[in-house]
Length: 275
Ligand code: KIV
Ligand code: NA
Image 1 (cartoon, rainbow, N blue to C red):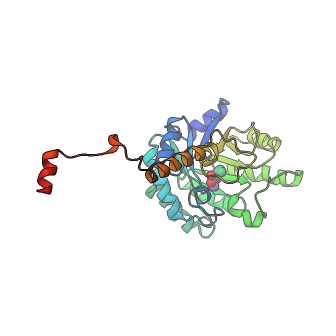
Image 2: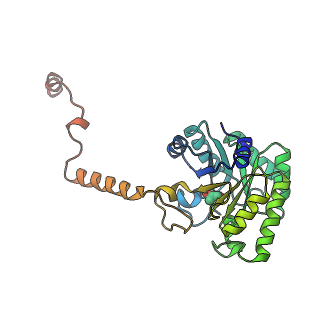
Image 3: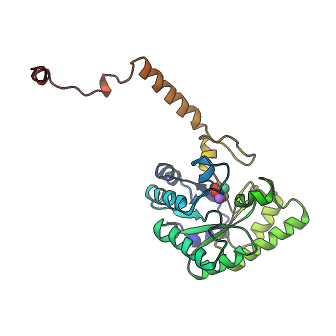
């Protein structure tokens, strides 16, 4: 199985890292079989699977349940699990205990935390305790209320400088990887060059050490709004809707089940039944 050491090595060798989200066993199995290097059980779960408007409603129990399912589907892939909203912001003890549940109860190989400032110390403490930490900077969806929407981050020199500084700080604190979301490609390139840990981009251009996308966006499954940075490779929603529509019509017209879907009993048993 690839590990944090493999990903660092891949960066050194300029071999791109392909990360993708998964939330359940069948999707995790497909993602693994397709050759994804690392799976993220993202708290995007809240939006693409659970039907919430943002990631703010996702709980630790939600993340644990879905990580366990992903583990059963993808046994040989490194799994990162998002720590959800406000589960790593109060005491270091609470943060540790929440990370412990994600690692021990769910079986994740690493946790991902959004943000800078006070979160840096959490990254440091977790790493010292032996928890591989992935940092997430740029557009941090758990802070959508503070950021005032899902917008590109670091477009001017001042905010860009802050993002470079924050990136260096998370690396210094011991983060194993950095996810950079929705930043100009020039800035993502600069940060990827400045850091020794792999930088995985989403909406961050070609020059990061790897890419991550949301499973449902890639396969076109139920996603309402598809952001500019997404490449939708297929649209399984259309296939699914077609299939279910045909099923409903078959039921109404008694065209399903057919003989091949049907069990029968022998005539003499039938005679005995009617006596
Ligand atoms: O929750 C998620 O899917 C993420 C990725 C978009 C990076 O954090
Ligand atoms: Na997330």
